[in-house]
Structure formats: C-alpha cells, structure tokens
Image 1: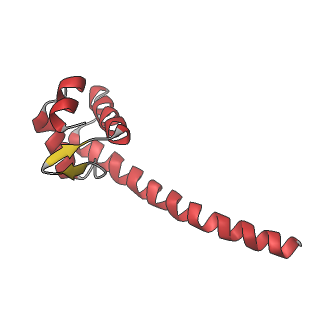
Image 2 (image 1 turned 120 degrees about the vertical axis):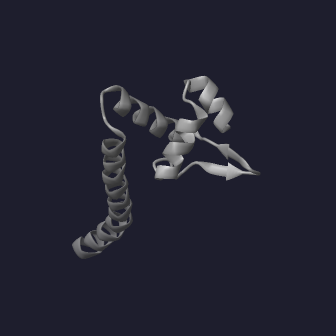
Image 3 (image 1 turned 180 degrees about the vertical axis):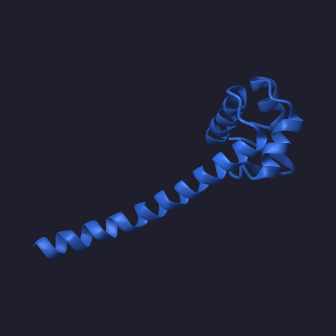
Amino acid sequence: MTINEASNRYHIPIKILKEYESWGLCSEVKKVMGTWNYDDSDIERLSTIMTLHDIGFSNDEVREYWTIVKKVDRGMRKISKVQPRHARRTKVQSD
C-alpha cells in the first residue's frame, strides 16, 4: 500500500505519516521505486501510534513508547535465536 493509499484508507494525513517515519517509528516501511509502501505490520504500528495519540499520549510519550517496544523486540529476537540452541544442548545432555 502506498503512502497515499494508507493516508486515504486510514484518514491519516501524509504529513503525519512522514513525521512518524522520520521518528523511526515505522522503520519497516519500505521505499520501492520512489514510493513508500506499507505492509500489514506497518499499518498495525501506525494504528497503534494513532491510538496512543487518541488516548492522550504526547509525541514525546509515543517516541518513548516505541523506543521501549523496539528494545523489547530486539530482545525477543535474540531470545528466539538462543532458545533453539539451548533446547538442542538440553536434549543432547539428557540423551
């Protein structure tokens, strides 16, 4: 979905979408052939951002929220890499 399509479908001004991207909040957004393209996970993040604003979060609070989310995501990715190795070692030790 292009930035224009996302803006029209979800009633989010393009200016706001570009601002969110400049914050690094939607870093998964891909630019293909000069056009921003959003996938479902990007739209989900944008929806969360808009909800945070709707319930009263300031821009700074949204930025802080996403900084925490990114750290947790990185931590979970690291855990998911370590878990299979640990499981294999545990299985070998129990055999």
